[in-house]
Length: 430
Image (cartoon, rainbow, N blue to C red; front, side):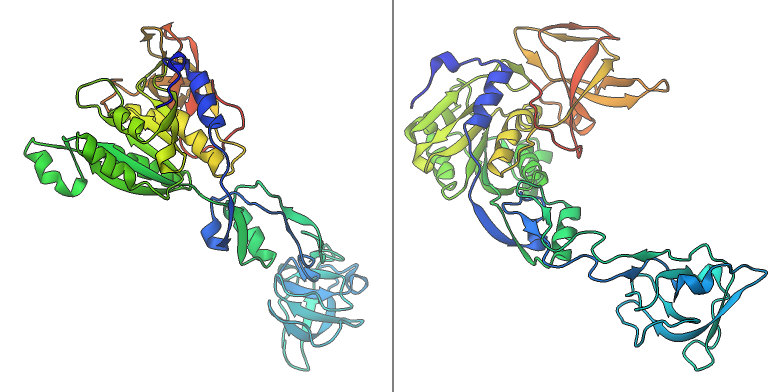
């Protein structure tokens, strides 16, 4: 196995850059519009027609000629003959002539001859509409020449509305639908194989063994599958490998056809940590084995030649270490594979309200809650015990604080990587 020993114990920033630079965007595919949500658009999308395609009413009311209603007031109402009724989705049967009005609903095409819509609350609502005696009294001229949304107000035919590289959110999906696109070409989403290992692990369906005190649930499997889904990727769960080379090799082989492999645990130097040996058997080119961070220093990255050269993210086994290293390191690289230009969680500066000691020559990532105090100060507070096996510290966290080696005292400012649904950014956090 090609391993650069000088790349052992990399600083956090170096490790992150090697991961992101060590992958490339996947190819493109065509997807049905609703199935493209969360994907990155691989083509420009232009309007084929003007939108809206006709002048339409911005109000429920009466389409009129402005010249006919000027001067109308409650004391001197203007009475017009109502010659048609146009609900949304229909067109007027005739133009509006002098002294005439057509009742119209919001969004309906404005009839020829009309240059404004008097909202219904500025009228008596009309009487006899739909009959030859239909009339409406207009009590205000405030809407003269108003409440018409012109053809092409949103976009003109030929305008590029969606650009290649855009992440398809609900707004982009709605825009594509309005442009008549039932299918879109997008960057292919990574299919990521997920493998946990350990004789002590079981799936949640075998929780009786946990109650009996014999096993623990492989929570990392569920965490990784969920985080991949949140990032718009597809997880292929490979199961739980036993602590033998044979079982690990068998499970790793199941990753064939995936775009990337994520493993948890087994990359330390313990007697039962066999992932290194299996990766060596499969011709993995390793970029690094360890990173100067806590939690999660036992973290590796490389390409598995035996699986077609797909990227391998070797994450540590403790639950907090797995989740934190995925969020900070693996997720940005996988987003790059999915075509994203903005791959990183945003950061926020906060005032630390608890003391924290980042011991050793390591960058620490304590889990914190962010709170806006009465004076507007953004404060960070530890979520409680910070051990790498305390999974509830992630449940309670809004962010991961970035603490270089040394002491942080209450009142010191710290940089925090914000978790959750905040918009992604282009610049890395370290």
